[in-house]
Image 1 (cartoon, rainbow, N blue to C red):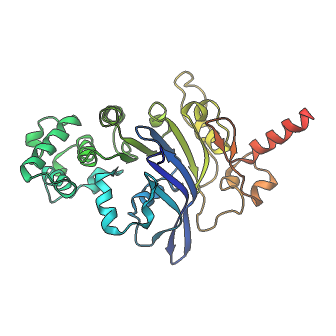
Image 2 (cartoon, one colour):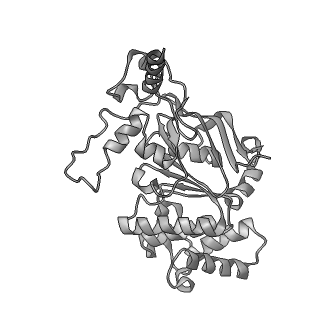
Image 3 (tube, rainbow, N blue to C red):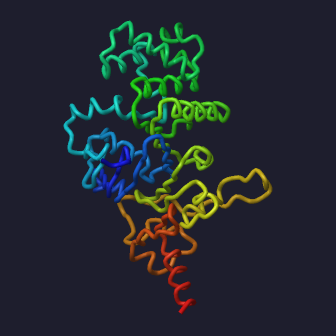
Length: 332
């Protein structure tokens, strides 16, 4: 029996469009241990959300997992039927989507939608489901939950709706929670509250979290491991200390250079030049190569292999391979 609750092995997901095949996820692999938090970082279009939707198998009609495995407690869920997946979603794994307004049904009350999730995945009666809905709203910090369950989504503020989404995702106490940019639509003070709430609930329920975001600041204190994605591939992965203090991929360094530093607010921010990659026309070599200031000839032609830099730190960049080769030459 594997000690990991989730293992993703060489996952490839494509969207088959009129313009051609869009390879949104290109050979992603990672492990998730029970009770741990994995952060997936990258700009829009890097494949973060598609990785999440592939795990849950809720891709758009044109999307398809073309190869790879997704193992839940050692069992490959990509082989499961739709009926098995429906039972799995909500009961064992849940997701908080980016925008709570489009995720909640505007014609049903908040209470009805919470109760529906409980009734669908448990053997509780309607009365017990209502009690569970009130209990979950209290847990996520919604004031006056007895009256809130009678309200419709448009009657709640953005922060309140996001709390309702978290309550819905957690009402069946899943083993894994995927949070797909859960704080994007919220202001900074509410963001901090939501992240704190997720950490508290993780301690209480012992669940594993996959935190998907484009904001490195959000995951700095939350994640046990961070995975940086670009062009549907993993550039770099390691602990928060590895990524923030010892970045080894040029894209990660670019992301860190574009974050304001509290200790030196006069320092000029350096944006990453160029435009995001066109997934219909991927370069032969490193995906980040067209935007990289340190690119070499080999970067255009060949994909770099993942290099282990320490026990916890891995990176796929020709610059690291070059440094390693130069160090070996010096030691001869």
